[in-house]
Length: 203
Image (cartoon, rainbow, N blue to C red; front, top):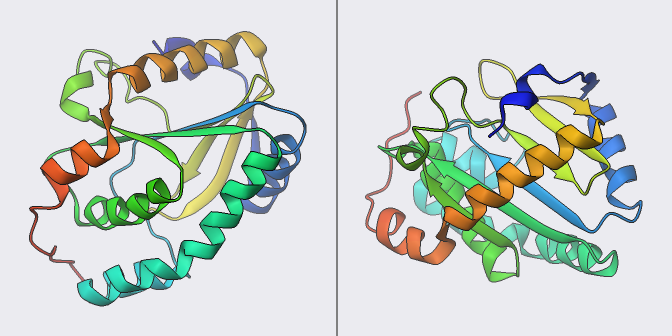
């Protein structure tokens, strides 16, 4: 499904260059943004809720998520103004990692504000991931495809940028197939996340 992706030609962009390129392409007249998120542990330094989570302050971490409401609301307003449909597919392994448990509460706020997020159990794509995991990508229409990169500690590093239209179409088709198979966000959250006890974070 994503075989060609791992043989595509790309250009490395450091984090500031990736963000600049992303903003430029996002505002260029594309009609959709698709994000496929596969990693199970990331660092989100500077996000007050994540900092509280990482410090083991679970209740405080959940309360601080609300600080993002206006920022997310503005993001969705900007996407609507540009007529860009944004979708996210979150692949989740079991047992759920503490990071993913926290992140799902963040994503719940995004869904409340209008984001289109679905969740896919990694056990349901074992056949697809026999050779490689599904890629960590952001797809902007048919204009750009970014493989988002992280260091070994889960910190964002930048992205590899692909511009081959055939590769972008193939990766988009793979995203669409998985998105159609995935669970609605609230169905998954209520079944798998809501019953969990507060996580224990290793220091």
